[in-house]
Image 1 (cartoon, rainbow, N blue to C red):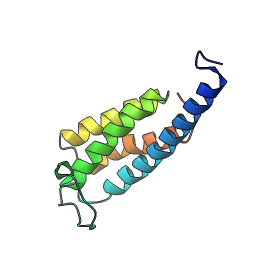
Image 2 (image 1 turned 135 degrees about the vertical axis):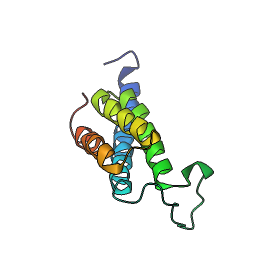
Image 3 (image 1 turned 60 degrees about the vertical axis):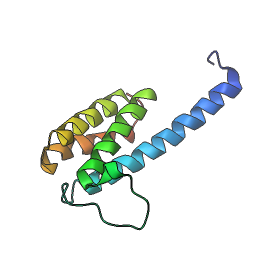
Image 4 (image 1 turned 30 degrees about the vertical axis):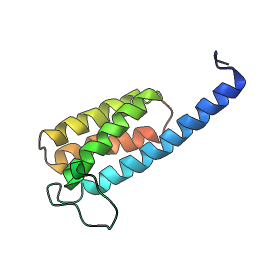
Length: 115
C-alpha cells in the first residue's frame, strides 16, 4: 500500500490500466502508419484533424511522443525509450523501415510487465 491508501491505490491502478490500453492503441496505429506513405497528406476522415497532423508522419510523431511520455510515467521505461527513439527518427525524416523496429518493440514491450 502506498501513501495514497487503498482507495487511492485502486484509482491509480485504474488510471494506469487505462493508460496502458491507450498506449497499446497508439502503438498499433503507429505501426499502421509506418506501412503507409509517411509524407502523404492525411486522408479526410470527416473528423476534425488538428493542423499539426497534416501528414501520416506528423501523426506518427505525435503518437510516438504520447507513448514516450505516458509509458514512462507508468513504469514502461523501455517502451518509453523506444518510442522516443521512434519519435526522433520520424522527426528527422527517417524512412518507415528504419523506424519500424522501434515501433514494433514498443508494441511488444507494452504487452509485458512494466520494465
